[in-house]
Length: 605
Image 1 (cartoon, rainbow, N blue to C red):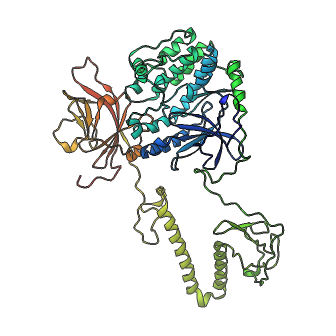
Image 2: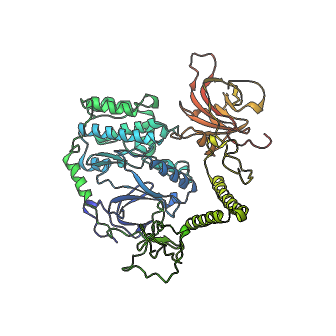
Image 3: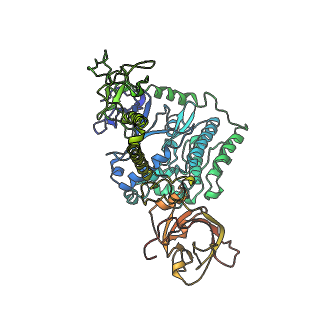
């Protein structure tokens, strides 16, 4: 039990239901709890503090959550920014999923405002610029934060730190959220989140505007109260910016635009912060926070000491492979047993194999073991003393056998030449067979210089073929697809058609009079990609959220759909918009990228 928890309840003691160890990390205190789990303080073996977030058991029991959690954590580990807390370790397979990030010794923005009130304009501008720079890195990794709020922004001595980026997506579409459990704070959601529409990086910009307003005013821009009431105001009403300083009004108002396309980009947000500060480039002073808030950082820097220094892990963290450690070296080298001297090939000076000597260790079935020394080190001029145990590596013995065979070849060239050739040929065949086995297990395709058959089966007669290379994509931009028309991705070029042939209806647009409009396929499967997913061939091959119809109300400008036809073709369809109201016809505009014969066709197709 941890008793020393520091002042002001920042470091809370572990309670009866709190774990003491997570995958080798000994927990020293509890830092807080949220909608998805609890956060604990721990230390690396080198003594660096880390924050470990353990997911709630309710989410842990959902297989889809675990899959998404693992995927999002892997994406988050690619984010390396000055204003983000890096993810350093995780485990999605254990009894309770968890992730570890660098510990930031500073209060959250929500705690700072709640305790000390609203922040001055200069601090807010530096805060917003830092968060925007963090979003720039996060979005660059293909992630939308989805849950940017004051409690996910930590105030460090050298600037803000954004945490928990992308993790909220793991809870989407799980059995919990579909049954009414809410993850995140409705107060800081965007209109498209509240309406269940497509999430894009612009969603984080809306949240950034809310964070800026909260920091400068001290209260949420859309008020507080029940979730339904707040979400209604976010979708249908304008924010209450009473008390917002004039220097921040243009910045906040543009970020809080209802239409995502009208919000500024991350780069524009940084530029607006620079203009509002009266400088072309923001410069962060050493003391960018008010004195009272900065004092909280000092308090959090004095974290409780680890339970043991360094804490010896009970087991290796899940993301690290176990590395066997050598036993303690004996004070005196072992005495070698009596040996018989044998002359080396051609009686030439020899050098012992690398690593052999009094302090060398050789691998064994369970770890490592000391290797006795051999006489005749570098510079020896006589025969070498061979040790009966341990034997030198087989590679060395084979080289010695080859040398002896060469001697025999020279001495008995007339009588035994054919036999020697047979021995050498057999050795080469064995090596070729080993090379073939390695080539069969290789994941990469052979280089063009390998020829049509590659490197496999050249000498052994194997029928293994080189892996099939991905087809080159073909792009068709700005296709206007009218109502009741369809596309066939096998055609060259891909163009709208209204031919009555269901076997060619790969992608069609339907304007339904009595129900919602939709796009559909009659020859394959569709997948609507999430925001942040990369529209690549690998993505289209791996995503299995198949459907045959997608409602057009779920599409926004830039939405992407993967199409896989039963004939083995794959297409990425990007929605660009609808016909203008002045147009006499109704159509949608799409871009199509096609990989023909990219997957195995279905039987009887």
